Length: 602
Image (cartoon, helix red, strand yellow):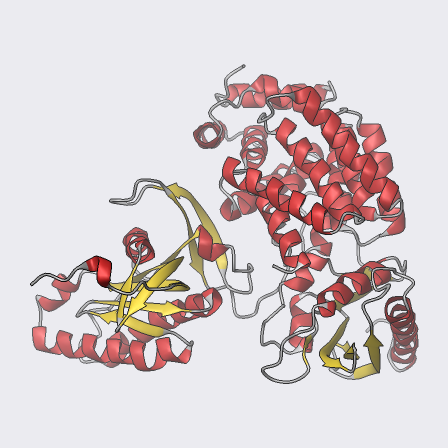
């Protein structure tokens, strides 16, 4: 008698990262020495299940003769397991009796909601993971955008954007990325080298480089107090105002949240001289934080202190838990640097989550993500109505809407951008972010590059370590035909944001600055970095096509323009000229280069 499905108890949805690993050409393997091949594959899948999957906190859902399906709670652990699967396949192949027959896997990952019952799993996410695996070449890992959103490049690997992909039996395309392990030496970021013919030196950092890491729970298994995230923001803001320090950006610091990494190692990733790190726990009606300032080279703790923090007034930068700690850190750094110089020769979906997600979505340059960013920023504004940050980013959102050609009412978007920028400055007149966004409005809406540059200079006077101010200042210099200044500013922005989730955006705009300075090889390199990380950002294609044309590579420029038109079918030369804002001989040459490469006139 058939089972009445309506009588079955409903199953809860559980969010998991699904990993599908498939042996490439298993039929070919079985064609020779079938018994030995079966033994090798059995050994491989036992190894994958018992050590690789379990060792990374995963669970095997299904195992067939030539494929394995597993689920993980943490997307980063799932990616690490995928790397481990490829290593295991290589080890099994080289150690067996048939080394001439390599075993290759292709692996797909997708983050999705699933239902579980008695060892069985249900959900569309299983199909998507397996379809992504079919896109992988032997030895590759393909992840969906949902997985990519939980990864930090290059800590979790190097990502290559494949764009929206049509998968078999799925009604809508899936944004996919190829991911591969970053070099183990991890020189983050690599020193920026100008072309051999360039006379412009890269500015050397002359200030102490400080990274402020997210606090970790004081006791294993305990929950981090909410105030810990607020304190991180406040310490970065306070210490960034010191002209003696170069403070790593907040986005780069947050990349280390919930990562089992020692502060000294994190400092090396961030290219910092010192790291401020610590623990936080709940005490009697207050949060107790224990802090340590660590010298990255030696590993020595040069200053330690304990602070008890109540919620009242913590958003004020003059609060003792903020200003007091910042002053002690600066003094400790001064004393430590002095002591080092004496002994050596001279030649020798908390608020922060909402904020970060909104900014990430804003810079995806896809319509759906862009609208979602607006919703997030409005929610953030409603939760912290007296904070300038969401207002500043809302101003930027309306600027992007105009610049991307998505506005159905340019006059209204222009007015909204100006209003949000002005309101942010009313709330926090000294906010470097608010000043940067006010400059962005002047550049993108008013087309007044001189006014924009003035705002960026004011922002940098208040916070010399604001990477976005340096980046957009470089753009303003570029539009004004000041190529050398543009390149200096943009390269500084890259130095200040080594692990920023928006690094592709920094690469893209820095490419335009390099192009304005006639450093076309550098422009090509930066644009290709940007496209590799986000193949949907049209500006990087325009810059790449111009630079290729100026280097005498017309065929490559035509290919780049065709890739641009595939993601922005309405792109044309007239739009480029309008966005350039300044009518200069150089911008006219660039417009002609795009026309020669096949971009429609408009």
